[in-house]
Image (cartoon, rainbow, N blue to C red; front, side):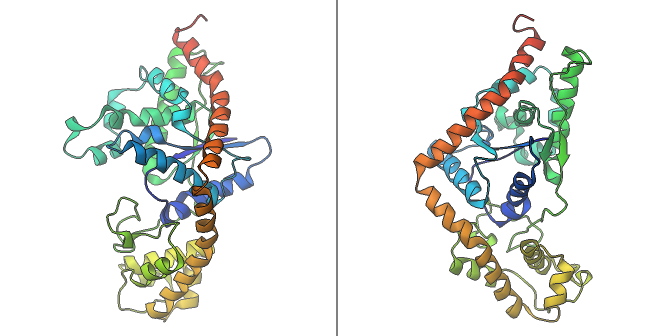
Length: 338
């Protein structure tokens, strides 16, 4: 089993990133059977598909590496690297460009969402980045890719590209690419904004009060939770009572996700109480959970030499792991002697 997943190094990690993805990465790393591997990468090549500041991108890459290690990703057990140090990602994307189809990319819902009405004004990279996503996982013969609901379509595209390439250029008994399967962790929590229970918690939200950043100190966490949007009704004793109460449901979901309980268990404890009692309890729980992560992150952030070394070692491993796939792709396309 080989698991591959990536995250863009833009902005601080927040609670939604941690509970929805990063914590599951750590679990997969810790529970991986002998002989299996995890590769986690910082998608800095994907980041240039949108307007960006170069200095901020590089600094963000280092900070994201620090955050992932602080959350529990162990560079001695997982391969942690950034795409830019492994040119084979971009190389394979171009080689797959003859197999991917315009119609497939036009149907990508994230392309439609991000491009909006000004599609002609968007970068080519934004349109073709699903092909780079395919290259990211196919390069390493990934067997499994952790995906959220919004990424399932992109993994299906990767499988379509791999299947068509194998059909067009390979014999049945010697395909170049493995078709990766999705991993959708059932316990992955969907964490919403603290200001709007109908919108996902996001680092792009202009309001700092909408999210809990993993680097927030104890006072900041408590202040954000106490000011989180709620309603005047007390908490019910069962989850059904939170229907049409999105902000209340979000806070209960966060508490349940952090403790590992189900929402009904949380409501069994706090049902009948108001948010004047629940919010401080939630704030204290988050402070206790995030304090070690925040402390470790600040230590790592100050040691650029260590972070550079972690990414360099991971990139060297990744280049070695992807080399045979890249060579086989060139050979299958007739670009080198067969």
